[in-house]
Length: 199
Image 1 (tube, rainbow, N blue to C red):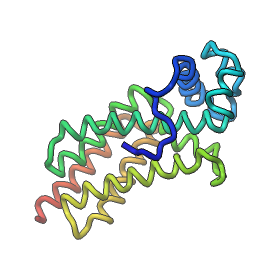
Image 2 (cartoon, rainbow, N blue to C red; image 1 turned 30 degrees about the vertical axis):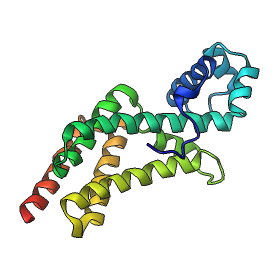
Image 3 (cartoon, one colour; image 1 turned 60 degrees about the horizontal axis):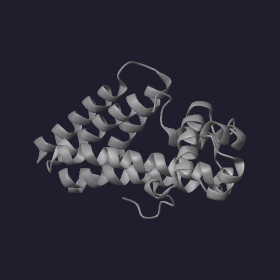
Image 4 (cartoon, helix red, strand yellow; image 1 turned 180 degrees about the vertical axis):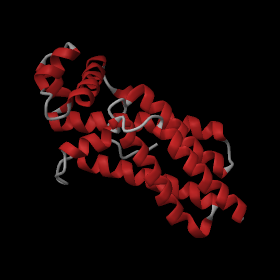
């Protein structure tokens, strides 16, 4: 999907995969700052030397964690977009369906990128660019999908679809109200239907 990502899971040794799996679970459940390399190494069943040999630093483990989650999300989403076919309205709604399914399985505490950004606000941190690029990628995706439906209002519609999506992620993570993805999807459906009627 994105060749700029520094890590491909299938290129890792078994020990490095265990480190990444442990980091994924611990960083997401407890927070990035709260989890040290000692705990990650212990959970992964590797020595700290093995951990540092593969990843170099805790910062680079954070980079790998976020890049891996992003890559897995994009692969997951691509399957939903494939099933939706070529019709723009169905493709837009498929993003909300994918997010609802992904969040139920992988993101009980909300979006890992938003959560990481709460802890990493320094643009010089190597993970910062992954966090911000992921959201820019989502905006570009919504804008591209909107362009297929309504070229003249694509930027405005893309931003609105993005806001609905991100609001649902936050409401889900905080359990603000039930079924936020269904709520966002209904509003997205209304926007899509209005554009389809207009055209």
